[in-house]
Image (cartoon, rainbow, N blue to C red; front, side, top):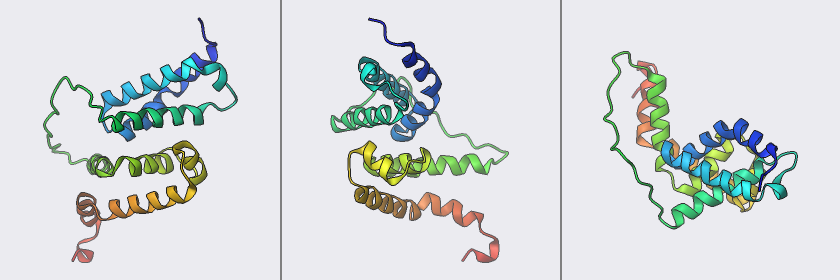
Length: 172
């Protein structure tokens, strides 16, 4: 019951990229690891059919289908510990704070919009590729992207750090 070694090569070389996508979708490291594991397990079973020059679209689609089925079933993972308290860094690393705020704003988006933003801007897929992965029309991708970006533009936490980046005379 051995599968071709190209699956092992694919899994080992693409794991980090898949984990990044899964984290952006789930916003939780442990859940992202579970999602990647479930995705790779499903792909391994059908790898003979998948194996071609570029299996990544199939794997992405499998990941999104798995993710979608989890939140449709209201799947909740078990978390062994509570969230650690936020500790202010006296050095004030603004870039890290900005990334955290952006992650939080992304987490507040509805799951479908989050998936579109992750695929379009983090995975750098075209509208057509994103539509193919999500199984919807290009028009749906465009409207979901527009709505998601509009929500991000008015997110209060993102407004706070954008205004703090402005020179003092521009803040009014």
